[in-house]
Each structure stands twice: as structure tokens, then as C-alpha cells.
Length: 340
Image (cartoon, rainbow, N blue to C red):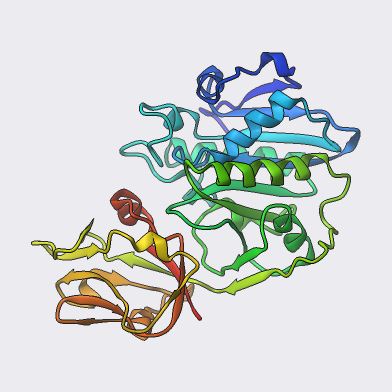
């Protein structure tokens, strides 16, 4: 891909890795491909992280792994993507830079529309040439909450990969242009959401899972003992209608939009009962929110309703990825949900 450079770093020695995570980040010249030689050089696995600049747990795990000098079972290819965004001050505060697109929505053609598309295209091209046996994409959730994995379809190898990190699995048929959409094209692909950013528990989840992914001889046919995987099928995204406002608090907005309750993210993976107040609406429900299936059908009214200016849950549901960030709510979604 012209105009895009992936910097390469072969087998860095632990002494070459800066002790502080932010110093390690600042030492990277840009989007970086780190190659680690494994005991079995005939196989390889891919790790990608920092697609969103405000989700540092994957980078933290990579940093710790490199500092420890863990010997990989197979060749490992680590891709650290959104370096400039992550080190924009204050560190790890921007999902993407102002005026740029979400990199994790650019993994579909065309790949020549802007810098994010060109970088996504370059990554796809590199991964296809590597022909890895697996690819994991490590993120933090948009709000507080427990870790979970995301897949496009159910397969034993997906369950095995996710079990390295967590027992929760979300299966979605929504096509967003994310890395996860590549699953099945050249290898199994799973996304790991490690929990909220800035949490030591999220960093620990990422490090434990990544260490196993790198060091185990086999990761696609694991049969975890005493682990029951908890599946959540075909979630929908609660999204803003383009052009409406969003904020958080206990007062309705003056303009058309929604004011969400400030503790919304605390509902992640908890049951939300019918009649639960989620926020205050200014304008009609369908003028403010939407919840479309992969076929484009709006199912909003099946799950939510408005009464006296309040947004209420219509049925029992579970939320995940609920965020308290107006920026994420505007540029991505308010939350994902499944009926309980």
C-alpha cells in the first residue's frame, strides 16, 4: 500500500524495551510490526492492538511480555497500530484523532480513501501474506465491565482462543468494517475486550491471555477444564440518529437528543429490568435513537419506549459496552444489548 509504512522490529531484546509503558510507546516510530521468532518457525500467530488510542491494556500486555523475554511457541507477529493517537497528550485519551475515522471501521474496501483506510489495507495485506494460524485483536471496553470475546460465528477454535482470556462470548452478525469481520478469510479471528481502560484487572486479563497465546504449543484445540462458556447471540447497537446531541446527567437537554444516566456503564453484563429509566429524551424516540439489525430493520421500539420524556427499557435485557463517554456515544454507539 503506497503512502503507508509499517515499521518493523525483529526480536527485540528485553533490555531494549523501556521500563515505562509511555516511554515504550514514545519510542515507536509509528505503526509497528514486531516479529518474535518461536520454537516452531513453520507456524505463526498474529496479535493486533491499539487500534483505538484510548485502549491501552493490549499494549501494556505486549510491553510486559517483551520485558519478560517470554519464548514463543511459534513465530509471533505483533502489530501496534494507532501509535500517534495513543501518545497524543494526555496519553491514551483519544479513541481517534479529531477529523479522523475510527481505524477499526476501515477493514473493508475501498482502502484508498484516507490514511486510516490505507493503514487498514496495509495491515490486511501483511496478515494475508503471513497466513497465520490465528489472529487476536485486543481492546478495552468503552465503559467499565468484565472481559468478553467477540466472534462472527461459533467455531471450536474461536472458543479455544477466547478461553485464554475469558468465558464470555458475544456472537454478532453486524458488519462494521472491523478486524473481526476478517474471520474465516485467512484464519480464525477473535476480538478480546479486556474490560475498562485504566483498570489493573483489565491489564492482568490481557497479560495472562496473551502470555498463553504466545507460549502454548497449541491454542486452537484447547478444551478448558471446568470452564463453561457464556454466549450472547446477535446483539444490537443502540445508536444516535445522526445530528442529535448526547450528554450524561439527570436533566433533559435543551436541544433534540438524549441525556443518559451517569451510571449507565455500571449496567454492563447486569440484568436491566423492564421499566428501568435509562435517560431523558428531548424529541420523539425515533428522532433520537435507532437500533438496526444487520438487515437494516430498526428494532428500537421492541426494546425501548419513551414516557413523559424518559427513556425506559421495554423488556428484560443485558447491556455491554455501555459507555459514559459522549464522544464514543456520538462516533460509535451508546451500548450493545441482547434480550435476556
